Picture 1 (cartoon, rainbow, N blue to C red):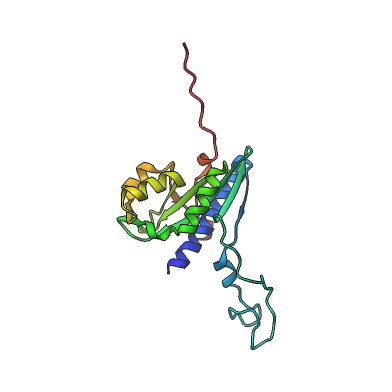
Picture 2 (cartoon, rainbow, N blue to C red; picture 1 turned 30 degrees about the horizontal axis):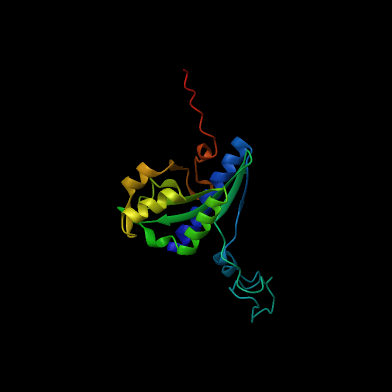
Length: 193
């Protein structure tokens, strides 16, 4: 069920980026990961293998195991690069930090150091009719993770720390989150002397 929820959230996040693309004229793409390749099925008999023993059709292969990907999505807006790693959880009280793997943190930190904006997009799916998206910069997430001794982060604390909190809009295949604000530059404050 966890993988299904994760893939459902990634689909909703893709819808969200598409809505933002139409609104802001940004560019985005999905970075496919190992689970996407594992999920390949024979077009004839629907079995999950490279060569189907029943119909002998050969599925397109990707060679060896693909390398770990830096994030799930990336977008470019006004010359700035944004990376998003999507995570979902069903716990009603908190998010367990162990769901973000070390290689994902290392990748997002490397992207952050290189000048990209690296975010964790965490989806609280504990209330089916009131799902929420929390977007946190990787540095802020790490500070919160360290403060909780690497165990869990309460949803209330996540809401306070997130740079964007958005409720889900719609249901089913067309559901999305209003994430366009994450791409817009913050207005500069002008102090008059």
